[in-house]
Image (cartoon, rainbow, N blue to C red; front, side, top):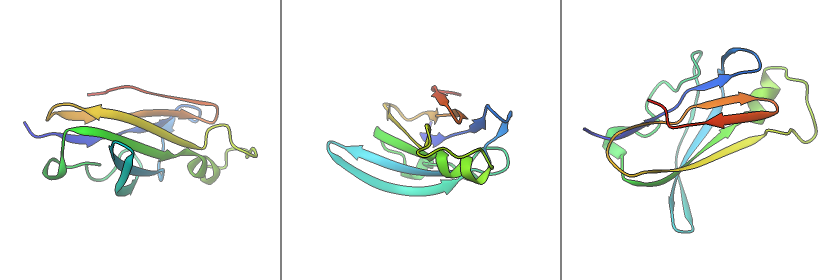
Length: 117
């Protein structure tokens, strides 16, 4: 089985998928953080392609950076200065070639994640 990475972002305050949320993927190697790609979520809160496809998969440490503040602004969520939830970094390890799914449940005042399926 080849490894790959996906996500799904749900706006729990509005009760819908988070459409148009920008996501950056980085590979972490010691103190070095290398940008791999930038994607955005579609109308289902997912990316149109795998965030890290099987052809590029490597075991290691990664970081997904979800640009939640910009998404909340675009949705018309009443602004705060600064926003309580703005940029959400999630650093995680992929230790075997498998499907890694890292969802984000998002609201203006909190978020959670887990290893999904």
